[in-house]
Image 1 (cartoon, helix red, strand yellow):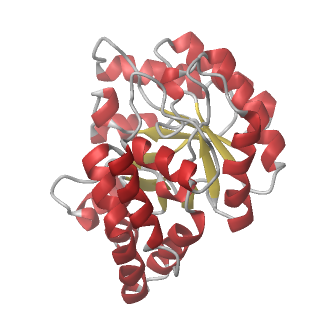
Image 2 (cartoon, rainbow, N blue to C red; image 1 turned 135 degrees about the vertical axis):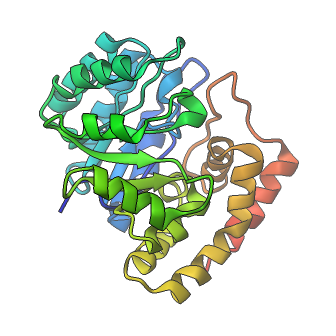
Length: 297
């Protein structure tokens, strides 16, 4: 089975205002993911504030995570960077450190052409033998992968999956069918944007890359397992309990919400990296209320 299947849980990176990781807090954040047996941990994704951290600190965070997880669950690490040589160096370190897979977003200040994105991915994919997932996240990178570009990238030997944004028209079945027709057999298609977990998995997505799963692995894993088994009624009941959290994600951005949740749960006493600001006390109270609805999942 592909590394990129089921629930890939994306935790926060607990760090101080200077971007230095809190090693003990990182261990507390990761332990419930291993205990819940999520299908993979997605370290240093957008939820993990990768774009705000130095290359050296990101490498240290990966080393700490490998030690903390100790092989109990597969570990995927984000290696996106503004410069191709930095992304290549992160990929090389990931292989040597013991990561199981890579996640790569086309981070750039200057808008990239398809050829520039391809060359960037080819360089990073060629820097290690680890399977690589394309991170199609236009809301943060301002780059959208066309279907022909995805098909071209899928021919690279180590490129094995794509992490898609939620389709604007809500047609998950249609989009997944188009992707499967254009991509090699066995190429994994997953989504992110947590309120889309239910419809995307019921439509046949291979994987869901989740923010909530990185802080609330138990309830979210129950949702994923039910949806992937085609148990629509059970999955819908669980998803309904997440509705207050999804509303907060949409209103404030998921990274702010899960930092507040991690603090409320006693996992990590850290804020997002500046200039991203934490939630106010009133907003945090709403997060506490949303968490309370999930107690019996």
